[in-house]
Amino acid sequence: MIKKIKSEQFIFVINKIGSSPYLFYDLYSDERAVVLKGFLKNIRNPIIKGIRKVHLSKKINSQINLPFKNVWGCSLREIHWDYNLKYYVILLGSSLWPIDYTYLLKIKKEYNVKFILLMLDPWESDRMSASARKYADVIKFDYIFSFDPSDVKKYNFIYEDAPYSIIYDSKPCMIENDIYLAANAAIRGGAGLFHRIYADMKRYCLKANYRLINVPNKDQKFKNEIIYNQYIQYPEVVKEVIRSNCILEVLSTGQSGATNRYHEAICYNKKLLTNNKNIVNLPFYNPDYIHVFEKPEDIDWEWVKERIPVDYHYDGRFSPTHLIDKIIELEEEREKKENGEKEDN
Image (spheres, rainbow, N blue to C red):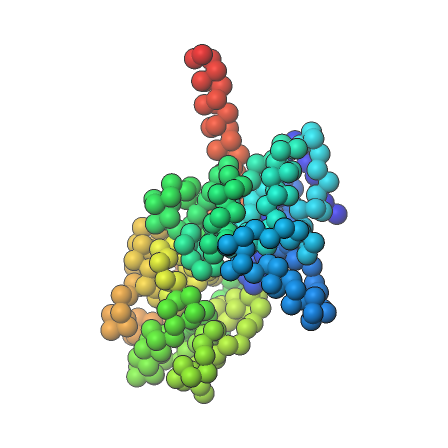
């Protein structure tokens, strides 16, 4: 059942897999928001799935916009568009590629709709893809928000913390591991750096819960120790975080914004070991709880093992509900400016 409010509606189109449904969890209790999960229908027939894969191929659609992509299911069609409402449609950058943008242009022309792009990946990353950047040029977003300071500076985007919702109580519990890692090696330059760090951990006798995905068999150097290519649901990741003393964060290639590991550390009060140099400029940075390294030799493993009380005094600012407040604020500023220009004329 689609919720409606009197004058404005904020529609978030998120990915239905991975961590997205949980990162935006706070929106389900916000009466201003409607959350739609993804564009694609569940298809079991392998032949039909193969056709869909070709039709929605990032590579093909970066060269030519194939028509009729909405036949695979566009969740925006669930909305009963109303001429009396103002709509703000928030789309994730990494999920633009399956959209038939002609539909977006159609509803923007017919109704009072503003499109907003929320970037949770670097603009030039593989996850964003050339096809998604091309679509963004056509759609002409009213606002583009990015979590990445480099992209904000380079492309004049609006900075916004990546959304994060707390899904479990952060009560103290038994710590089982000195350090926790869950990372996609493919978007972080391969497994090499992770293996170098793990080798140092072994020398210092740390107990690690170490998860790496997208690592080819030939590159699995610690097969009996590191958990390779085993996907788990995001709530399980959080449970493993809660049972760990410290979290290891390694940025994707070209990234300067924080990852989920940073938000987990702040929200669940964990120490953070990161190669994000920009973290010293973030509001919750505390040198007692967060250490920055450039190369594995920089890491203070005794600090990683040390058990200390951690409390960032998190104030809820990562909640996706704040993005709605930010959009309202920007719209009010724009309206004042437009009215001022009219009075001057």
